[in-house]
Every structure is written in C-alpha cells, then in structure tokens.
Length: 221
Ligand code: CDP
Image (tube, rainbow, N blue to C red; front, side):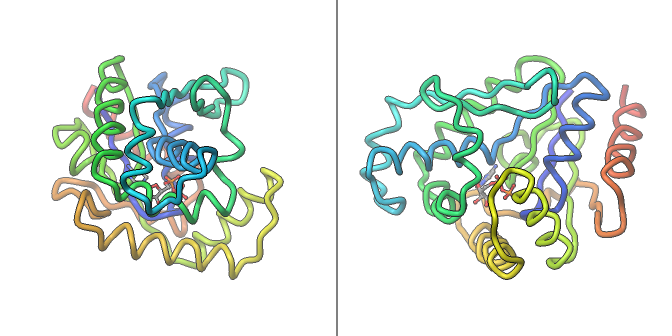
C-alpha cells in the first residue's frame, strides 16, 4: 500500500507520517529531506543553488539514502554515505532548497529514487507532489493544511529542539516564501491531488492526525 501526504511547510506531514509509519509498520519516506540533501551537496561543492548546470553536474556522483532510527523512529538522511540529518535543517539549506528542487533534472532523479523506495512494500511518503506526480495511483492521498501562525510556531519549536535558534518572524517568513515558490513553480507545484482527503491540522494533536489516517488505512485493508 502507498500512502501520499502532501501539504505546505509545517502543516504536520512529517510528524504524522512518522507516527502512522511506526504504528502501522509502514516505511516512512521524507522526500523533502532528499531535496535538502541535494542542496547540501551543492553547498559542499561550492555550487550556487540556482546554478542549474553546476547542480546537474553533481547529480551522477550523488548518493542519497534514508533509514529509520529504530530507537527514536526518526529518519536519518545520508549524502554519499555521510549522515547529514542535522545539516539539512539549517536556515541556509532551507533557503537554498527552493532553488535546487526547481531544477528538472534533480526532480527526475529524486522522483525515480522515491518510486524505487515505494516498491519496498507498505510505504508512507510526505512531500509536495507525492499524490500528483510521484504516485498518482497511491492507495490513499492526504493534503494537510493549517494556519500560517500555527505552522510557524510548530516549526520554531521543532528547530529549537534540534538546537537551531531562530525568531518566530524568521521562521514565518521562510515558510511563507517557500509556500509561495512551491505553489507557483511550473514543475510539480504544491497542490492537492483531486482525490486527496483534506485535513486541517490546526486544532488537532499529532495523535489525532495519525488516527484519522490510520482509520482510512484500516478501511482499505
Ligand atoms: O518540512 P518542510 O515543510 O520544511 O519542508 P520539506 O518537506 O523538508 O521540504 C523542503 C523543500 O523541498 C520544500 O519547501 C520544497 O521546496 C521541496 N520539496 C519538493 O519540491 N518536493 C517534495 N516532494 C518535497 C519537498
């Protein structure tokens, strides 16, 4: 079974998908982390994030992998064999990922990797284009939304926990900027699939969000 969760930044996709994954024994795949890892690759190589030819020249020599930390249930993301789970969350990478993920060749490579990972059995993936492009035939599709201030608060708390100190304004601005770029780009824009279930997570706990999705999964099983 393939479960697709899309939505804007901070809407609760990854925390919910992670919890559903661990409760239902589904493999959780964080596709945003892959675009972020490619952005780290460009940064390490000294290639500007909007240099399409430069970023493309790195693609063949890039290995991105993801595993689940069995203790915490968190995903770990590896770039060329090195754990970059911390680096991918820094403000510099959050800023750069918007440009790197707009490069068609980057999307082709990562979408193909995501489809390969989807063959591993029961999987739950979160991103921007999972229900529309990566797995248009997914068994279940969800689109999560929430008020911008709630999303910014959540993200601020998450970053603080990871040791990344930013102001509420910084976080809110980053989210607004990325949402706008993600929704308006021509390749695989952020938008709900026609058959996606809309979930407003504003007034819900992570447990409640997970239970909604698990309810749909159980009906399908
Ligand atoms: O968790 P957050 O909402 O901050 O974003 P993310 O899932 O880590 O994704 C980071 C960025 O990668 C997004 O803002 C998108 O620009 C891009 N992305 C994408 O284009 N397609 C995906 N399937 C996932 C992420």
